[in-house]
Amino acid sequence: MIKVSMAELSGIIDAIPSKSYAHRALILAALCNSSTTLFGKSTGVDTDATVGVLSALGANIQSTDFGYVVEPIKNLNNNISLNVKESGSTLRFILPLLSVLGISCHIDGEGRLKNRPNKELIETLSMAGTSFDNTTLPINMSGKFSAKSVAVRADISSQFVSGLLMAMQLLPYSSDIHLIGELKSKNYVDITISVMEAFGAKVTKTTYGYSLCGGGYTSPQKYTIEGDWSNSAFWLVAGAIGKGITVNNLNINSIQGDREIVDILKKANAAITISENSVKVEKSDLIAFECDAENIPDLVPILSVLASFANGESLLTSVERLRFKESDRIQTTLDMLLSANVNAFYDELGIHIIGSTHKANTIQGANDHRIVMSGCIMATNTEGVTTITDENAVNKSYQAFYEDFCKLGGIINA
Image 1: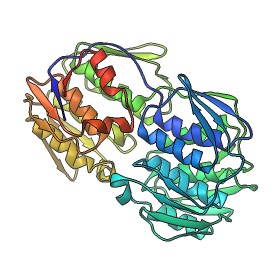
Image 2: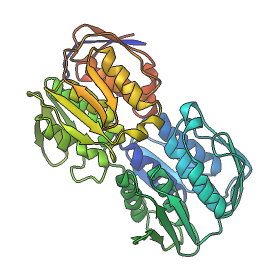
Image 3: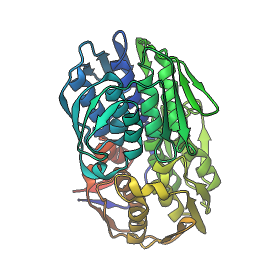
């Protein structure tokens, strides 16, 4: 556990490369016709899990100071064991890929990923010709994808759709994906299509879902992974409750859903200055806000922190899917707030947060990186010393979090 003292943050920081883009770029680079240099190194064990899986399949991925050099898979390894750690993206992206490649393997993972839902994706792949012995980890699979058209539930996880899109482009024929239900977190599918197009694919939106031309991928030779809005949100909120923070290396026109943090901060009356590739947020009198979190579920913990310092009652709606993240994020977000004496509750409308006077106490990190990082930001404007457990959970997505936290004036004692 760590102890975080009150110390309002300020300064300038660079956004780390986007984990969402990194997963996708690494996978497609490993499936190309020639090597690819990726600029931007994603720091987190989730990305490491994807690198590990691709390496086990036969790719040669060299980590460099600036990013990665990826030599694509030339000779596929079969009958292997894979560990996706606790990365839901890695698992949901790799299952369709293994199916299309016809790889027989044993897949396992760690933590709550063993309980996260995969049933609907596996049912889709089963109907396409792949055999599975389970719908939750560990999973043994064999057989080969042979369908020209599939249907998949889109209202559970956008990762199901993204995984199928990336894998089915490898088919030697055109194919179609039919979406069942309303697509959740559409921005993440947009990211997938954007990266696929950078690697030579053509994806067509249809009335029923998506159509792919097939034929594989062509290396762009060089590809830059843009800055991560999800993790930048912690610093932007810290600026709104602290002494002002500027985050550089951000694509203001990004299709990342979590770019919405800028609009939410404006709604909360934060003082914001936007330039070509940076956002500066300074302290102001924050006001309560409402936010539909349907397409930005990862922002909910840090948005709850923002709301806890705003005057009035804020409401975060469409949060039901947070039950199935690294923790039950509805409950752990509430626990984080309540531990600091913030008035908050959950009902059929969503999570209600009433701006309160904060008191330092112990926050249970619940082995959830976003809860731990949100707790650290809240502690910077909470009188006294806040204790936070499971501090190493930040390594899942942001291994340099504490280093950057201290650069901006944060005070941490082990």
